[in-house]
Length: 199
Image 1 (cartoon, helix red, strand yellow):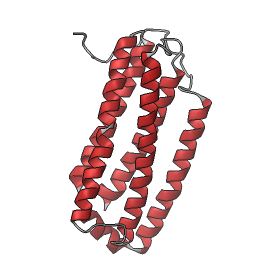
Image 2 (cartoon, helix red, strand yellow):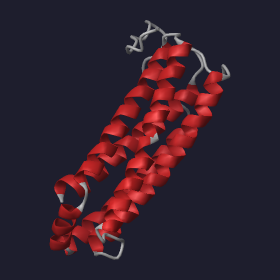
Image 3 (cartoon, helix red, strand yellow):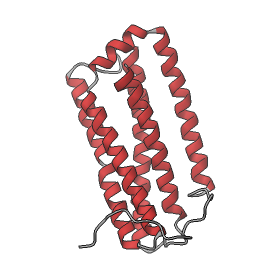
């Protein structure tokens, strides 16, 4: 069985200084960052006005669930980066395998979030449990929507990849997916820090 060790891109297979993906995905990523920048401003304004509520609310969150989601996001991003690197090195089948692993791992996010929300409801934590939880649910559910878009993107790119749409010289679609997923990963790391770590 072929090893899935991360490949080293062959010299000259990637243009230095070239922006990965396409203009459309970077317009989308910019919109995503602007959207969450506004939501983070709301977070800081609410936190400045209700510091005690935010400190008490953070203590009630399931840190294990937040940590599990963080590991899922980082791991799936790594797998997708491996898929891009493999294809750049001309290893198409290995790239498809890495992308498949990235998709399967990413599916752990909505599962973990569902279990977390179910645990929250059992503990009486709803969007009406205080300003902290109102902001928490709004931000995390908005991020979950972006995750679903990323998962749908993985399915689309994987189908095209399996059909031979990408090769070592033409794989902008795979790069676009990777760029979007990494951006979504970065936003989750900020959300995790704000709600589960800083408190």
